Length: 500
Image (cartoon, rainbow, N blue to C red; front, top):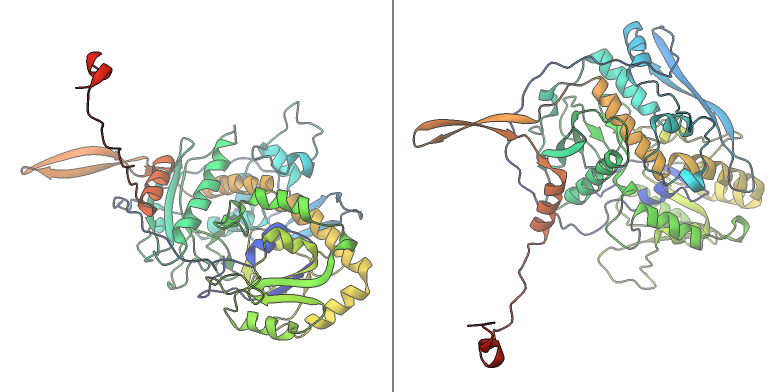
């Protein structure tokens, strides 16, 4: 999600291969090659939202300021057992929003076959079709950010169609709709000199997968999402849209899973599932890893330049600047994502200011910086205490292993699995619908022919399958293969009328 223009500043050390944290370190560093896909102009319309309330599994009292209390326990597949802890995610609520939130997101019950089911990351981690009940059982702490967004939106006024306009921004926005389990693209604005199209295709593919792999109900919704690092950089208005990450003060934004959970357009990363498989093949045992802190990336800002300065000529560091667009050599050592897992420490930049969470992604509330359930190591943003922290971890391998085991149990084996992220998408659909409106599939269009007004009904969007083909066509125009020169007609072919 990070680019040279927009960076989210923070620093942490990961001591386990929690894959998406690795993916974040190389966001938006690849050559730009996007094109704009044109769609018909769609007029904004206003429609009153429908109230649609269901029962909920969340227990919330009606106080002015409250919290949703979520607890879970899991067992790590590593040598140490995973942490079990309680997490409280504060959500300011009034009496009405507390009651609404308690009924908005549903109360799935297990089928006869599901009773007694427990999440097994080896079996279920790649299952995109978990039922709502299994999603709740497996990932009870997954939805804290969605709970916050529902509460905020309900208290401040439900989302209307006019708020989904893309007119306020020149690029980086997609307006889409799910109707009768079909995904439509209503409008899209892309920057041809950035990565907008690639990110949009990855996010739309993730949404389509979340729909197709689920045999339960999918609500009809209309929404706008941003493909840029900062969803609302230029406008002071509060636009309710889906974002890759949000600043703490942008409470109107809804955080969606990152596009990297689908794939990257480089073999240094590949698809998310491919990265997972490759890590299984190359990652050594914990005490056999290279006892160094590893990082690769472009020196795009002061934060990264500070990292390069602090780690220069340090025996415990394998930190190098990457110069994209130049060939790989001893001075420009690219590294595949899976190969990062051969090292004990993974240095991560620009996720968020962890101690204050200035930037929030959909799993950041699960980061624990201290205590028995610690799952990462926090350092100063200028890396001045990095040498001290690394030396301590090297001198205390039992502490390092405990942090690594906690990270594996919480992130790699549970909340950052493909199953978890797909459950999050579907909960996002339902949460958004609870505070928005029923979309319109058609629109009336009036045209003038020979001085006469003609009215017709059209689809308001382009089906995802068609949109994908149009995108590929526009990025790489189709050139018909050259036909070979025809041979003259004669002999037995002419006799049997096989040619003329």
